[in-house]
Image (cartoon, rainbow, N blue to C red; front, side):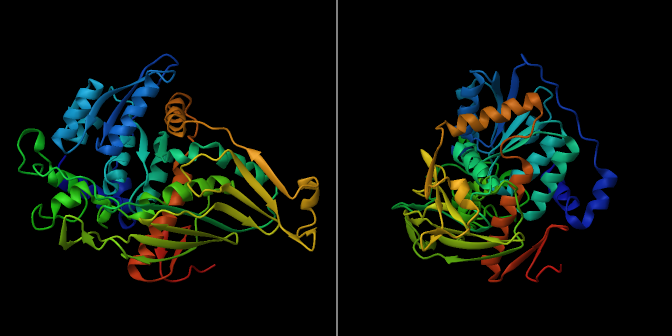
Length: 453
């Protein structure tokens, strides 16, 4: 299958060509039925920094109770393929389709740039593979819809790789909210801030690497671009795009898709019922990192270094998020209710451990604002609920491998993942177009016109 056929598949899967898909789509393949003692065979597609790290975590889990192994790695950069082959003593390839065509592969880890996530995951499920899909889940709202539908059709296991969601504080928060301890939920807030001298996402560039590179320096640039706009390696700063892809709209949503996913997904778990927003607005800009550190004559990025959003939900509450790559100070991660406030991460780091969550009652003139909560608080104004510490990455990977055997829904399933994705993708569109965006849940359509009731 050529890259052109990949683009044709992307076209056919668009909302306007669903009838064509129904006419030509092959029946999804069935995956191997795993017994309790069968070893799970996992392949890794995308072995850059993140992909290699995730692969090591799977390798670690596989040597423990999970009974799994890495059997193949894939990347468009030969040096990364070689590194993966050596580390995991497995096969390696430059073409992901060779991985998907292997009958011995039970699951794939997809850790490519964002613009390839959905295409590979969809093809993998069609071929009977379960998928560990790195965050963000995908690049567009339509891709989120297609992934959701394909999981249902193929009955494959798809775990979105935001290990933050396997922390105990979100489960504890969900219990508190389900018990009605907040009263009416009004507003959730969170942040994700970083700061560094060289500017975020300015990862090292291998100067000898490229489409003309020899031996391990070869990069299959056409394959890497895939469904994205065609670009010239030299004229379009291909080296920067390849090694620092998160700075470009073609391959990423910047802060929104890279960082906010670790905030929005846990919030959906806390709320107890994952929800689509109906209205989203965003703002920000390139305020600090406007020039490349190594070459001030060239622009550093297309995506903003500082970004904020407001999402409004049909059930009558809002979510406010702030982030900057040029300032490291977080705000507390909490949910405000009419009767009480629940703080999940006082330090604001959603990926960091908190030994407890805190519930604080709203009082006026010494009395509970919501009188019926007084009995629930049992005479207390502030309640601290202990949180169990765990290795969230190993818990998340272990949950995925376990679900492959039990066929149960994983911790960060496709439905929850899609609701997080829709919010942040709408925020990107709002920022880029300078408009408020609205979402129609029935049609999965985003527009700048309010949805009719």
